[in-house]
Length: 164
Image 1 (cartoon, rainbow, N blue to C red):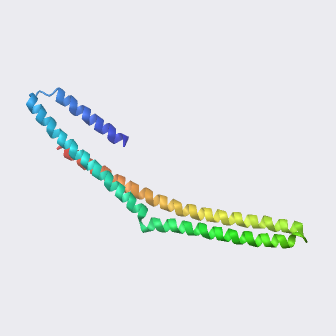
Image 2: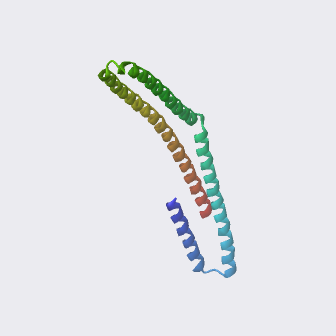
Image 3: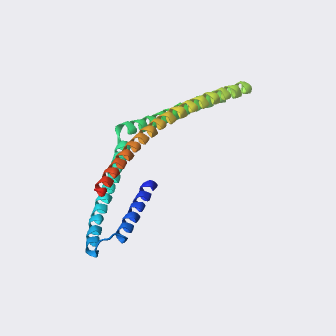
């Protein structure tokens, strides 16, 4: 974006200086300025359209079935993990209450085992959700890159039209 801005700024400055030092009559110069103003409008409209197209493409990607499917899969895995954790927590709580009176040390050991199991399942679920999110992120990056390339191409075409 900065490169495009610098380019346009340099282009504007160059054209302005060219008009100031041009060996043409005032009437001819005004006619040339009017023509170049039209070219800038065409270029601006092309850039505006390219940004609209890019926006539509990104929205289309985010709303796409594939991305929505990935988001849904992540949510389902998180819900499943919560259910498993709730079940494990309930089971361990009941077991600990029953055994607490008889064998306090044994209950403590079981709680530690459960903690390790839960941590492993949480880590597994984190990895799964992270993998799903990373895949979605890569897809979005690809779409953004594709759209950016389209916008650059459109800008180049518009620049060529201005130069003509």
